[in-house]
Length: 329
Image 1 (cartoon, rainbow, N blue to C red):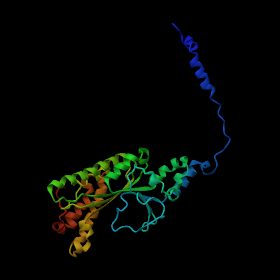
Image 2 (cartoon, rainbow, N blue to C red):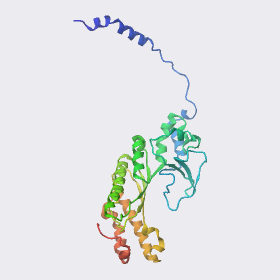
Image 3 (cartoon, one colour):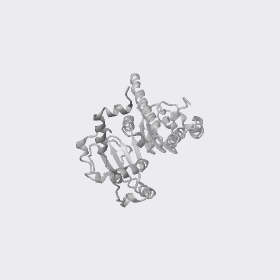
């Protein structure tokens, strides 16, 4: 029986290959060069520079190029005529919000088109500092995602965003704004299935977002309710997708703006009855607050307390006219 030593000596080919392999290794040369310039500064100082550079918020909208998030349409101008390809990526400046930069991404993420990418003017990048080198890019990523407000108006775009962006970057997001519109009231009973699919799509998307955006701190919800009759209570089907964010523990600020046909028509909707119109607007605002409290973890009775007081006491005389109901409470 051969021992290990005999095995090694009887296989000269292996021994020669090993020797040739190790013979290629050369001793490392220690460089005397020192890092100079910005990267030579202590990390604490670089973080102060990054915090100053990223102190301005940027709105990153994921929607079609002709989609308008607010009514009336915000007056915007192009930041630079040749900044980017206008078919997929629009960079604008909002005049009414202290020169806040608005970046519109209209193409589906993950479907990069090199022809359109060649038209991108990287010099006009909103955060050009992140493009300097790999090290600065890695160091500024948390600042970039923390300072950016991500805005969505479609469950499909939310799902696409969560699928393409790496999880470590998603955990850096702290600000989110959603424009959520209900499906509306189908005229035919057989069309209710589309209303249910619309609500379920939003529920799946927001459930995935609540499980992924673990460090989300600021949440804004712009809700457009197109249902008839209009029911304002926390047990409605269209409310359930929004309550998915209750699982987030780091949420500190939640603002919900609820709008419907009865809050947009002003005096004309109520035939000039200013008291009735004011009651309708106030109830919409109070229900938005109730949704905010519910998302932050309040129980149903606590969240709806202010709204119920207004409905049962302050505006009791207008219950028949408004018909926001008590069903389901």
